[in-house]
Length: 269
Image 1 (cartoon, rainbow, N blue to C red):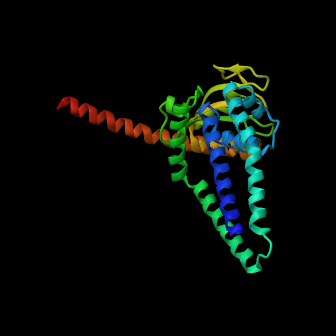
Image 2: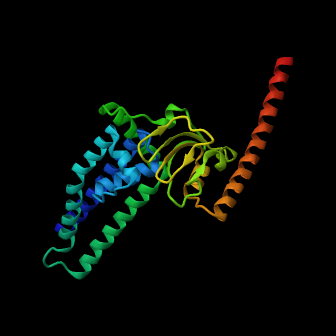
Image 3: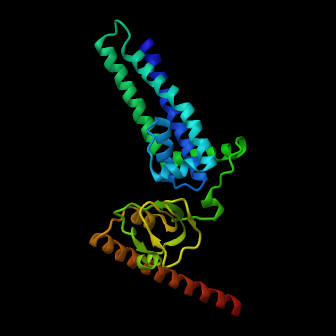
């Protein structure tokens, strides 16, 4: 009986831990942080890893993000201690038969697998995110904003932060040389590694390692740019992305022409 209670307790605490980090990640994303960075910072704070990166400093320097991180730091210790205690209760009871322990282990693995599938489910994530956002807006005084909703973004287009690394394709280049507009990517602003913010960067603005670019474009294009490294392969990926964008523009031009012809026909009627 003690072993079963321990397994239930372990799965319960694990579920709560995943829920807490998910709530924190959504709250961080509502302040304008990218989804990937929000998840990373939430998990880092909850596990106490404490990465000292420029991205982490950007979170700590933001008053609302700092409050969210502080809440995670308060919640983290009890969660992991409870998991450890529950597992000990599951497998450490005196007189437990070997077959019984294997039975408990199988239930524990099955429970973790179910939780993992739920955590990876896009439908569950969308449903959970909707509920959490409503709860945060209703029950907290966090002055956070969902920029995707604020800018009325939909479909494949999004706003995303990308932190520039030393070996990135855009590093140590001018914006004009990058020609990101050929890929359908717009630069909304740049956070310098020294804390300065450029709200209207020009073609002569240099991009340096440690900077954080705020970009608008198709999610797939932004993800490709985020992992693109300097060198011949990076240049090839830039050309391929530019070619894809030209095809997309051609398709859009055709749609515009069809729409204009339809409008003129309606006016003539």
